[in-house]
Length: 403
Image (cartoon, rainbow, N blue to C red; front, side, top):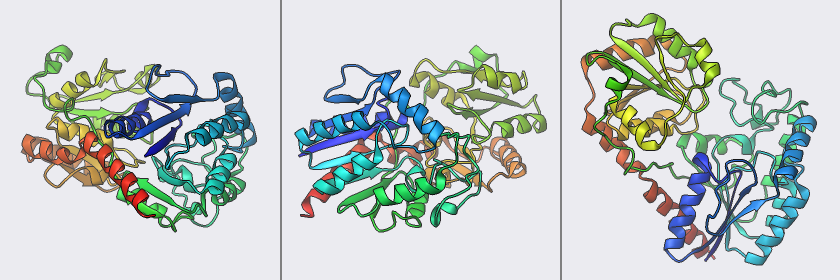
């Protein structure tokens, strides 16, 4: 069996998912080739990994995509070279991940797929595949994607564009992404799967495979975090983790909770901040720009009494699972796939954007000690990343057996 995987990057959450699937497949004797855009933070020396285009061509495509509003219409020569490489490999399955980020020509890619009738697996990590432009639409409360996008409210958000071409882009995407002979769509949450079934992708087979975490890293530790941060033993730690704090991730909610909660009882800690976030945070909120590794992050999760996730747009909610794996309960808004990641014994879901309810639940959970560490850990066990990679490999086998 030969597999080609394609993603916008070979690092971060989506890149690591791609590489893990490839690693586990190779262990079973499957030949896997991975491809990603060429850019900063590139991992060198990855087995059978190839870069699409170069830094100059990528930057040119990004600029053209921004100023024309025609995302995925450039990177012509880079895509031609990619397709020539794929043609030489002759894969049984092409596994697509993120196709946005201006590194690939969508028309050329899908023309090749339809011409060769190669089997396709497409893992959707956001909503971009079935909208005219945006990757998320929950905050904007825009559902035009169901019938045809236009007059986009989020042109300044990723993937940003200078001109609103969402109407034309929706039509182009629909033309490219539909009528593929054999394509299976995989989503990391039931919430996203339900949206796919309401879009122009509804005629494809849709399967949910949850994202996973490294349970050998995310687990309870002896943690000296309180001592390092001078947080008293009797003080309740409320933790938030994001690597891109914004309104969408609920930064304003933490600032509001800081105003409302008794500062003698509660200590808010935010991980993944930066200098710009620091400027708007109250001084008594502990701000941690980054952790040196995942184990350090796991020790912070372990030290926390409650993980608070007031996200307003979330496809999955991996941070919830990481917190549970470290024995810490979760409180989150009813947003996207975030509620799916916790059980009744490991966390609480409150109404979307309801800060009042979030405040009340913080007090009830923390002062009532209503969750057990072992129940939280148990809830996270089903998210073992190695088992999730195995599910993908099993899906490959099922797809090839259909012939």
